[in-house]
Structures are given as structure tokens and as C-alpha cells.
Image 1 (tube, rainbow, N blue to C red):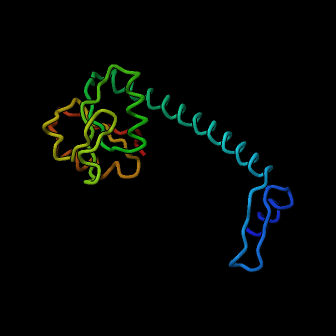
Image 2 (image 1 turned 30 degrees about the vertical axis):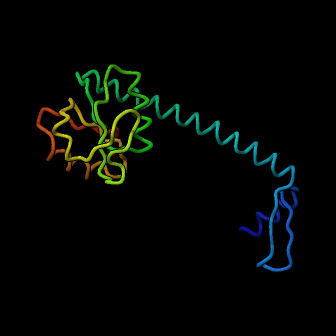
Image 3 (image 1 turned 180 degrees about the vertical axis):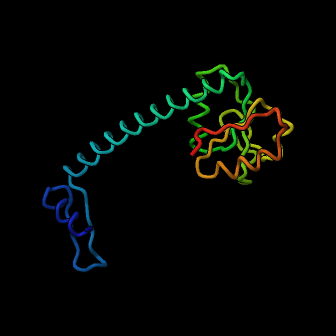
Amino acid sequence: MVNIYIKELSKDGLITASGNSNRTFEYHLTENGESFLNRQFLAFSAETVQLYASVKHEFIRILKQFESTGIRTLVLYGASDTGEIVNAAIQNTRMVVIGVIDSDPAKHGKLFSDKIIQPPESLPAIAPDAVLITSFAHQNAIYQNIQQLVSSETKILKLTNL
């Protein structure tokens, strides 16, 4: 497949190839190739921004449902890209993030937005209305871990029930 793509790119004038053997062969973008790459990058970037906006809008909808149940203070469990989008979406509610926790020791003590990332064991001292799990991959394991750390009054929330 790679050889087919290289032949097509070369035929379209997007790349040139030089060299005498597999070890010395090099591929270079032509001026048209650079222009094509830039157009593709801009299109990809625009689509990525649209996806981000869609995800943020969906998170706002979910968060407003949580807010309607009386939740005002949240701890985010998961200092990740998803957590960053959730944190941005929370700005469209009256809820306040009062802490961020993560099970990764390499993240502890570092800033996430304006909060210092703490280990899960610090959760009882924070005492939020709810803990929001921002991980999709490990949400069930995280849920089990949180149940052992918080009081029965603290709600444990997920972004999805998948």
C-alpha cells in the first residue's frame, strides 16, 4: 500500500524521490505538496475544533442535568484531555470544581487548570457534593475505588453509562 501511495503522490506532483538504494532513498515534498499538506492540515484542524465544540456542548448538557439535582461542588477524577473539556464545560454552569484527583502518581502536585492534582486518598478531606469521573476507559474501576473513599452523601457521577 505504501508503494502505491508513493507512486500516486509522485504522479500527482506532490513528492519527489531520490537515491540509489533502499538505504539512501529520500522523499521530499514539492511546492504543490507543501500547499496540499497545508490545506489538509487546515481542514483537519477545522474539523477537530468542530468536534471539540460538539463534545463540549454535550458535556454542558450532561452537566446541567447534574446541576439540576442540586450538585454545586465537584471534584474531577482524571486529569486528562477529557477532564480539560469537562472543566471548560463546567464554566457554563453554576457548579464549581473544588479539586482534581488522579491515580497517576506522576501527575500529583502538578497544576490542572488552577487546581493541584491530588491522589485519590485526599478525596475524603475535600468533601465535594459529587465526584465526576472524566475517564471513559477505566470508569468502572474508578467508580469502585471512589465508593471506598467517600461518604454516602457524596454522589459519584459518570459522563456515560457505557
